[in-house]
Length: 465
Ligand SMILES: Cc1cc2nc3c(=O)[nH]c(=O)nc-3n(C[C@H](O)[C@H](O)[C@H](O)COP(=O)(O)OP(=O)(O)OC[C@H]3O[C@@H](n4cnc5c(N)ncnc54)[C@H](O)[C@@H]3O)c2cc1C
Image (cartoon, rainbow, N blue to C red; front, side, top):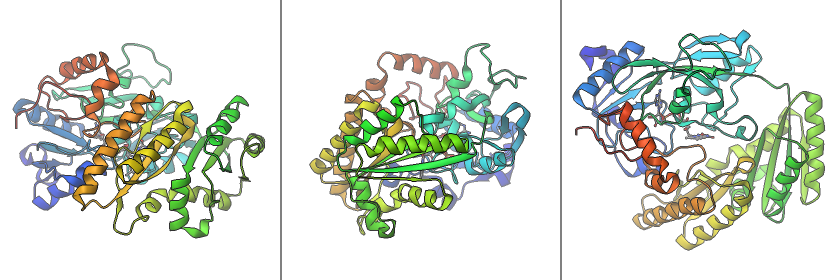
């Protein structure tokens, strides 16, 4: 590797390898997945040389952004080369006239939006990891966040990609010279690579569509004494023709966690709290916010409507401190990322929340529930002592039961965080006959199975040890 791309771009000391042995998943906490070597390429040529070598010698190669993934996706399960793309982070162009941005994979999401804001633009998908995760990782995972209910996920914004295939060849998707926002020429390879979790190639350049940044924002908070009233209110808001930019739910477990951790936030003691955010022109925001507040008052025990930045920040704080609040529920425990991201049909969100509460009691593991109720993405935060083998075993059973609950409700084991290694066992159940088509695509592009093995879908080709 040092001969191929230069000594300064290769890490092989044990202490360095340890830093790359985990991501944010519980699975990585329980194991030590050491790579053999880490490379930090800074050009397409570097990437092509390393991938070409890995292909020739049948060595596993694992693309990695910031390692904030929650699925063991960016770690080397059986050794190999971890390719850290996070240092390759230049924004090449903000093409404001064509509402586009062109960048390398390591650009941090928040930094991109800071740059775009100078042009009155923004890239809407907004993961909670905004200050850490890379755009390359977001494209590979088709990431989204609070605003997906209105603005969708990363896939809606990717116009084209440069990808180094597992054979070391470079391709450009979306048209080699195209700067169009609309383009239906050829098979849509861009979509194939978005969400492919690094199993089909290394993304080395990204062209994103961006949008004008709305000038107005407002938030409605509504507290309910009956969990069923929360989805009913969401439905009534939709029926009025209003599409909020976020609709979040905190159930009683989340409210307790926040009130224990930050009592000064004084969340009402309720069965559920909804947070609606609306954005657009200031006048439109006023109208839609007032209408949502009116609808919520029909069933809520408390409703608040705010447009002042300080108060909005206060209201959002309850949502944003949740991860820490969950972790603080038990001084001897920690919040784990496992079974944390199921997605269910909108009509089944309350069934999912009640189901998870029942499973939490059955397996004796405390779980904090919240999520993006507007698009059915339920987040669960199991809290346990990871040093206790009994609790770890119970947690594994609980997580499996949560995943199966999602499938039973007509949903999926993951709405945004992806499959990686932690949800691969559900591939058959989730995809049926389509799984073999996915496997054929993987074999066609990666006949030796070197690219991020053991992730996303089970494959027959496995690289040499
Ligand atoms: C606190 C916290 C909050 C989070 N909130 C959200 C959220 O709201 N929404 C959401 O969707 N996710 C969320 N996540 C998960 C995670 O941040 C996202 O999946 C993110 O997109 C991962 O980016 P990354 O740069 O860290 O990628 P990594 O974790 O390094 O990699 C993720 C996957 O992408 C592949 N990959 C990375 N870069 C490339 C590349 N250039 N080419 C090919 N493959 C590549 C890796 O092989 C791996 O499979 C959260 C994580 C944390 C820790």
